[in-house]
Length: 503
Ligand code: MN
Image 1: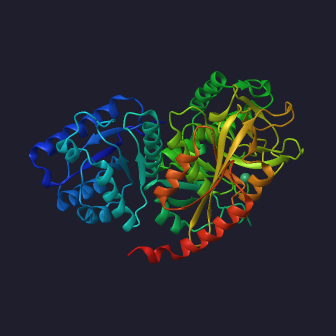
Image 2: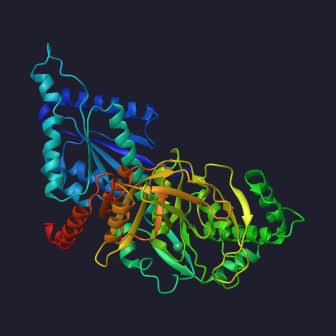
Image 3: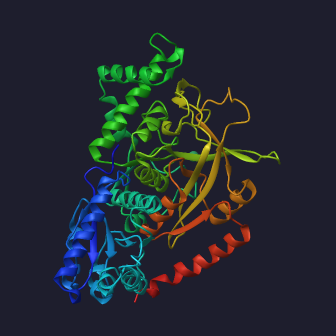
């Protein structure tokens, strides 16, 4: 999956007429210099496109309208090379519906101590132009990102890269379709939520389909297509002997392959980016889709089990943000604990559906009983996950808003092999430790289902939440229960009042 293909970010330089033609020409030259450096640096995931220097309220407004209507424009980068009186920006920013980042940088890194004169001073004014622009952002209560530093520095490019990924994930989500095969697992609370609110807030639509609709696609798959994909399984995984041709469960593997191909056809034809299943609603499907879900996730689909559409959409966005980065991203569930005082940790897994993008070894393709739901034994990939930093993220519906909760974790090697555990598994230590990490998570209402990633950082998730305009609660190495409690109470007040701030 290359979700960045064809996308653009527009580079917008703010100025004004007072400086005269010559200065404005230099402003345009400097802007081009920065944009061509960005594009040639190979440090940014998406192409940057330069736009003319803006000096009037009308040109700013027109450009913002163009950006809104440009299907491939994922966001704006603004740069106040000179002073650009910010009342000029009100109409444009009011209309703008794309994310934007303000680049608080200047062409020259150093002050030319020996040569600096008033011409130089008039040309290089980010230090106060950026502040004027910042004021109007603050005054209009516009959620936006500010990156301060020299545009060639590694940390500057890194911050910009992170934000661009978040904005691209946001772009991907607008108009995205989430398919639900069946409804929620009955009586579960956290996987419920307001789909109308979700569409208004996040931009994706969630719709349900009868499992019978999917079964039609599954039954249409040809034997030749099944043979072909089984050959791919044999090339990609260590296939257990009972699943090989002539083995006791070869027919089960063929059923699983048929389900995968049917799901793929359904999702591709409908243009879906994420989906959910539920083991309580499999009417006409012989197995709970395990391998199928694992492989579809590895190809970039978002997924949530038991009807969890919020997590399905979140996993999709996390996969977009993580595209091309080292480390995988998967649907995940906090399953069981190791509570030994010297090293409390979590074993994360699911009944079946963990994405092989996080595997440390060649996955093993196996068949085992599901032990819940009373269906035929499902085929699944089993693997471990390498140690290293990671995170878990959850989105919940608080009734009047969505809250995103992120817990940073250290993935560790299991204390011992798990020879009898028939599912993919990850062991991690939540930050700052299990006691505070799980305590804070539970107080914040975080789900047992998460998007898990070893590719993304806290900053990706924060940038994404800020673009979405949702509450963001971080649990990291500095987390304290008393502080988190206060934050949750304050957020309750802020989100109750914030609609009244917007004038
Ligand atoms: Mn679950």
